[in-house]
Image 1 (tube, rainbow, N blue to C red):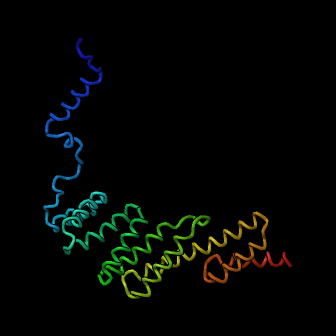
Image 2 (cartoon, rainbow, N blue to C red; image 1 turned 120 degrees about the horizontal axis):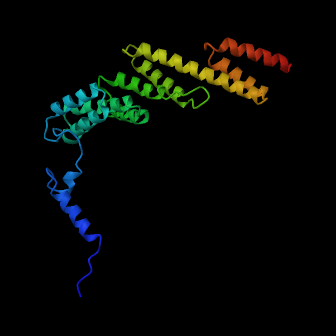
Image 3 (tube, rainbow, N blue to C red; image 1 turned 30 degrees about the vertical axis):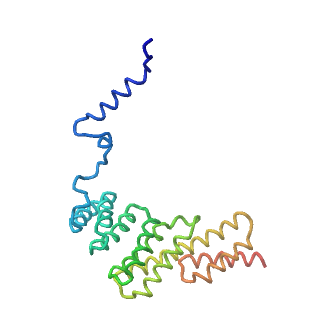
Length: 230
């Protein structure tokens, strides 16, 4: 009695043969190869890889730039170009909007190359990673606080760096954000009929952020609440 052939066996064999004999693909694996550039290989000198990575970076193609910079670190880890590759990976992550990842890369760079001439820039970028995460005044204020902290560290360590003036401006902007947040919290307590808590937040606002633009408005509201309380 002849063996019964499975209805799925013949199509499967034909599919495998089709994959094997596809033009230009000698194996099944070749059919699924990445679409990465053909010249991206470990045999290229680090100068070439960095140059190609920077070309992609300058065109805003950060994902492809990272591919080249990663190749430098994989095949030429102790070359001078590896330091630049480390820094540019962090920059790519930053401009891709991956601020948490970027911060980690900048942090790693600072730890590994504490005397590098790019450290003021790295410290500034660490502050910017937090600054970019500042949300609306009724949400998380962690980004603003950490941004101020990082920019202040930069000003202390490198008071005359090219990033000094912008760091001061960012500190002022983040401080205004925090002051407005406190005023928003006070208004919230008024909406839920908690005037005592509102006064606590307004007094805190006046004590911690005395130069904030919202201060005159906050003091006026505080005086009004205090008079009602009396």
